[in-house]
Length: 330
Image 1 (cartoon, one colour):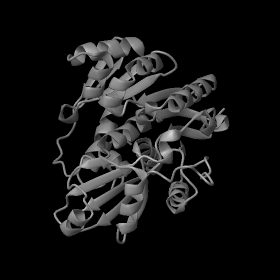
Image 2: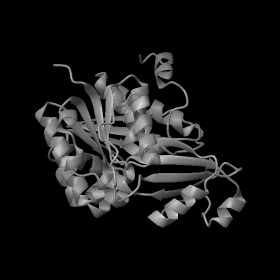
Image 3: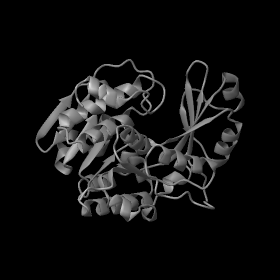
Image 4: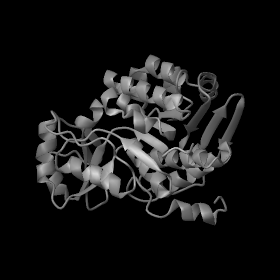
């Protein structure tokens, strides 16, 4: 029986709030230029209020991947937590308007406000990010609707949520329910420091209920405590059916059992690497859904990542489908 969703994602629902600003504003509001900082709730509220003519878009790593899949015509749902505040309502409405089901109602009288990444763009194009991880990081099993995760072909999880025990429990529940229904479940490791903090739990997850995992070279080496890429890939392929490791300008290495494919990428002059990994995942998962061979899946992922690297912002500015048609893939 055909599933309602081809891909369901679970991740941090972080609203990207973008404002064009001046260097004087950054100095006045003590925003350190050109870096990303994690901030607390009072600081987040003060900066949010001070932002002028801000634009709000739904963000978060897996949410960006799900959006990319939706733009490629894939049926999607995204599971995440937002509060019943203006930003949370805007997030839920925007996801729905994009064609992605957002089954979790914004939480009324929530203890924490909606998570946000406030991005200040200076006249020279430099981006200064202040991120507040509010309610989104508290995903628990109660937030995972069984009727959603049991009605998908692929489940995709966000490693960032693995920092808290309720998030780990939510992932196990989602993976178990998805697997019972015949879905393939996987994860993006997201961050080498997160992997380092929860290595044993990640190893248990990828060697247990998960069918695939995506990572970059640093995350893979952290997971298996090795400085050797080949050693990490070998151990990953022993633990999990499918390992996909992005290697920046060196392309992507894909391992399944004893087989390995090293797929090069077309060189791109980088403008902004934000979201490159998220859109690679979108392209790769698109390939899996459409049952392309793994090497072609890697090529599609590289094309999607290359497009987003070429401009500012974490989502595609032009149609990936059109690019794939031009290259004879579709």
